[in-house]
Length: 604
Ligand code: ADP
Image (spheres, rainbow, N blue to C red):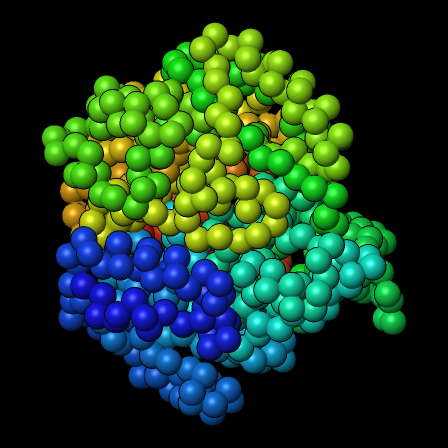
């Protein structure tokens, strides 16, 4: 059970990953809701010490000593304490705070804190010298996808965020910024406000604690027209697995003043190989920031029946592609509204199995949104007259769905979730979204995130697929259909009690079944949990796995010793391949049988 009082939550002034003072009251509430029902104890460790495969214990500790001398004792920590899961605002950097397997499985042997790009180079050279796997994190808040956990048990986590958290530039004329890994959306937003750049917006995801840089690297999204974070980046600084420092785009030109305004530079655009990969450690990243469009207005529509999804998505496609709907379409299943209250599932229903649909409708009858199955949260941008044109078209089209209702925001209380979405869609990071993880005590979540064309038939097919597994598994799903522009991302969050081994394994099994079934029908995931990466990578198998073969050749060329995040996105270095590290089919263990000696050597 967490021991801290809610009052101990670090603020942004105290810690790079803290909460802004303006959101402290929300953080306290969220933390006490979690604490109220938490039952998971802090357990003594059973499997200590954790040493990565491929190095002897005495040599590993010798290596740690050497690194401590180089970086300072205070910047190298051996991970031998109980695994405190913390919570969103106080996340662990040694493991996944929402582990979906045994908590001791995917853990770091040590955590190191570089203070500069030079330090990152030193760590990488050290890792090559001792053949120790390293795993970079920016903030470690990648919840639902593995948090801070390394894929290889015992890898050394490089926590970049703790000491490399400077906002290097905010340019109010070009509307750009340049950040280090430890800058959260909260921190960037607060700094933009502090500098008085009221005309600059920061596109933020559902929660603002993630790293601006880390989120973009994992293809995260937000909800203003600048919501595709990777598309909005311009320029990277990267430390390669062999220790060189490369700047991409215009950053390669000494003395340039265009690094953040033109992403391509000259020659091949190599930026892409550093996202969702293990080819480099990104130490700086630039972004475009959206100028205030002169106003915004959020809106909400409710749709009655499950089948309405088909017609609604058909209406959404042309409107979204033409940018009449000018932010990511956000069609949510209404069960999440119950969970967004922060109350556990038992407050609504005490029975077993999937949450009954009738119970959901019964509750919604008394909610300001009323009885419905789908909710569309959207925002229009621009001065009043521009927005009104778009809002009128949207209203006319949405109301073609029988039973569709516009929910008048002016009747919603200020505490309603709608206003949180309104903030997020206008560049103000918030902390409400966390509440639904409280559906179970010790709540954790894992996501199934397939991509489809924005077509009613596809949306319905994915919905039926998800619903079938939801009903069979008995674990509840929270579904969100998000339309970036032409594509539809379905995000299915499966929630579980992370102290209940049965629920955890059901959650993982159901994710595996969904990935396979979706692939059979031609749908692939855009992002996944690190335990599911091998399976997802295996579905991208066109032409006899040509893509993975290419990825592996790149990996072997850039990282001959295979030290950087082995297994990330299913890409295993040569030294690990063919030794059972991949989790596919019947093989469920996350560990393989050793590693091979490095190229050109016969012994480790
Ligand atoms: P968040 O920003 O959401 O807290 P993390 O810091 O956990 O996310 O990063 C998400 C994933 O992206 C990590 O698992 C890691 O593999 C990768 N990653 C994060 N930061 C970097 C970086 N600076 N360089 C390379 N990979 C990174």
